[in-house]
Image 1 (cartoon, rainbow, N blue to C red):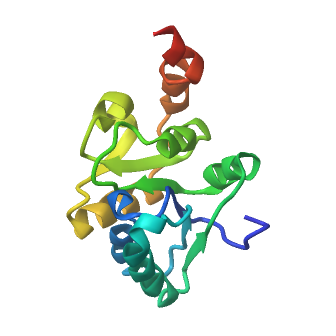
Image 2: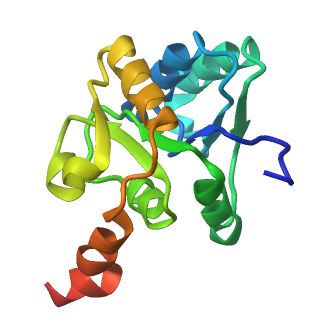
Length: 167
């Protein structure tokens, strides 16, 4: 918050390529210029056209910021300071960044595709990555809602590297 001069923001942490669907999140949130949106992720050399389209859109929306990389020591603060983390990707098992966000106490919005419901159950807001209105609605609901209790504990009990290795 202090370092990048942004607060009360929506966060999306993922490499910048089409499967992660950041452009749809940006389009969804363009209707809400009062809500800052922060994207953190590296561009992929295999998805330059998508990256260029995404960046051209972002440049037109001053409430949106893109950061290429943050070390994990700083990334955890980005999660903790965000009002919601959104990963409206086309497919996910869970999304490591979504688990990290939940562990930091951040409200999460995730895709309704893949296995996300098995991981996040009722602790998340779900969206259809093909539907801009669905992404907007889930993001705004999460942004304005009080935190859901229990997600951090669920992650610690089931989804740490140590628990994964045990299973």
